[in-house]
Amino acid sequence: MCANVYAIVLAGGVGSRLGAKGAPKQFIPVRGKPVICHTLERFEACGAVDGIVVPCLAGWCDALREAARACGLRKPMAVVPGGADRQASVRAGLAALPPGGAEDIALIHDGVRPLVRRETILENIRAAREWGAAMTVRESPEAAVVAAGGFARLGEFAPRERTLMATSPQSFRVRELMEAYGAVDSMPEPDIVLLDAAMVYARAKGALYLVREPPGNVKITTREDLFYFAACLAAGESGRPAGARGEGKGGRRGAWEWI
Image (tube, rainbow, N blue to C red):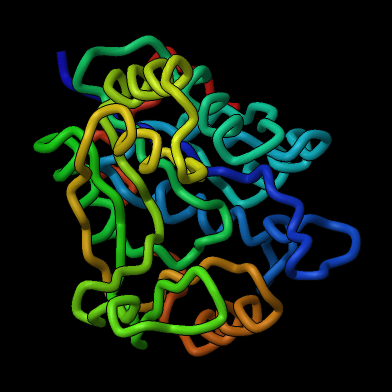
C-alpha cells in the first residue's frame, strides 16, 4: 500500500498583531484572492501532496470552502474547526485525516506563509519519510543573544552559524506524531512551553531533521509582511506556483471527498 502525504494548513489565527479590522489576516485579499488561498495553491500544485486539511477559525469555515472553490482548488480537502490555540488546531487537523498506514506523512504549515517553495515541501516529505520528523529552518541574518535579564554576558551570545529561525512546514510520520501528542499528555510539565508540533515531537520522541531553506518564506504577521508579499506577487517573483497538477499522485481524488 502506497503511503499518502497530507498537508495540514493552519488557519485558526485572528491576526491581532497585524491590526486588521474585519477579516482575519488569512482572509485578507491580496491580488484578488485571500492569503490562505495563495498558501493552499502551493500544496495544490505539488503533485507529491495527496490531500489537504485546514483547521480554520471558528465561524469562517464556510467562507474558506467558498474561497477554495472560487480559486479553483480541486485537490481533496477537508475544512474543520480549529482549536483555541495552535496545538489544539494541530490535533484537530490530525483527527480529520483519513485512516491510513504507518508511513503516511503530514506536513504542518502556517496558512499565512504563502511563499513556501516547492523544493522545501518536497524536501520535507523526503526527510519525514527517512527520519520520521523534520522541521524547516533558515539561517538567521543577524547575531542573536539569549539572555534572561537586562544585561548580556559573553556566554549568552549565540554564534550566528548555529542560530536558526524555525519556519514551516514541520513534517512527520502521522502515527509517530500522534504517539508524541499522546505521550506529552502524560508527562510532567516541561520548563519550556511547547508551542508547536516540532517541540511536542522533540519532547516525546527526540531529534528532528533540519530542512534548511533560503530566505523568503515569510509569515504574514505585520503590515510590513503583507506589503512584502504583495510586492513579491506584483514583481512576479512568486506568482502562481510552478508544477503540473498531474505530477506524481496529485491528480488522485479517491474516496475522500473534496470539502
